[in-house]
Image 1: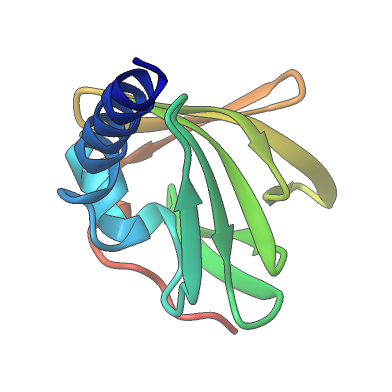
Image 2: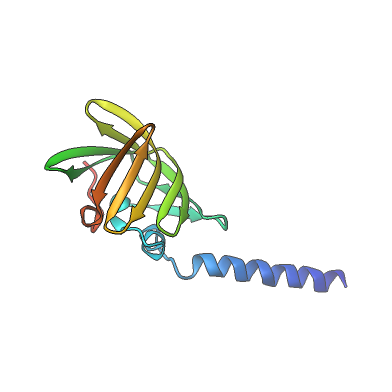
Length: 142
């Protein structure tokens, strides 16, 4: 009886893990499958862990700075070697590690949300809306 219960638990666990991992072979695929552009993560992701609750932990080879053009001006995003958050369709909440530099201020990003053709980045009490097209390709680190 105990062996049958263990077998059932193992089968159920493998079904849940398969539902999360099989369809997303890269961190970029996780973004796309959640209606987010792949360019939210910089090029060079070495590895990632996706948990059942949607939490993703991403690892880069080293710290990384990328620039996104907003209203004709360059905005810097700083990625540490390890960053992440909780991925849901159209959003990443509980973001940790990513810093937005605006007007000589460095603000920790807390949420990234897609609404139609815009990506809204929330950092402290600031919000920055950027066209989704700005994130069509993963930016290179500088």
